[in-house]
Length: 267
Image 1 (tube, rainbow, N blue to C red):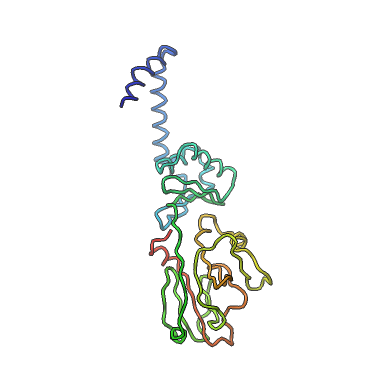
Image 2: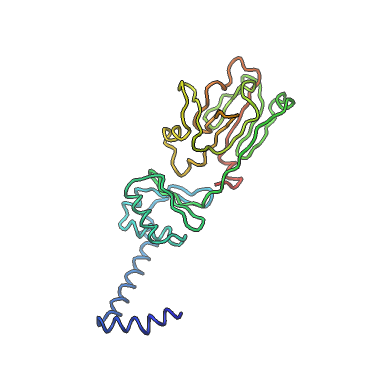
């Protein structure tokens, strides 16, 4: 309140002396700014379609809809300013959108804004996802069709001839060929695997780039690792030499469920 009083009693009179009518001009500008804000609150904001709500309370917006809005910077300001983003950072987000750069991340007060290829993602800063161990003892290896849970994963021992997976979110491994214990954990820079049919090894980061995985979800990808070797890039590729075959006697089924991850409260 003291700063407001100084503006009222010192700054405004000085402006009036320097330029008569300055107070009226400022009042008109304030009213115009209020009208602009009301338009962004109403139909102006509705020109920006939401691509979806994220499970952690965040949201994503089509990049094209923002940059083609009548006032992209104002739309961005309305969307993220109240989340603690400084106007200078909003300008940087705006420039990243215009430059069509992707993968840039801006953080403020526990919130992050990710500029992706086709969208802007606003979400809570993610915590480190946990790791899970699959280390069945000899008795478990002989217990068929018993389902075990490990975070967003389920696994079980099955007999040959079981249902074939419909996607890379599920794998059937020859339980006598995979080395235990195995760890399910978020992928890290430098991780690499020998994908089936490739005839060599490849970085997980390159596999995700080839699959055009959005930057906003790239850090959510898990790998199944045994010793120093990655056996499965969850959702994308399986390594050579571990898949169930007609000669397999025991089958290890591992299934990833994104819904289970959401229910557990992970980003």
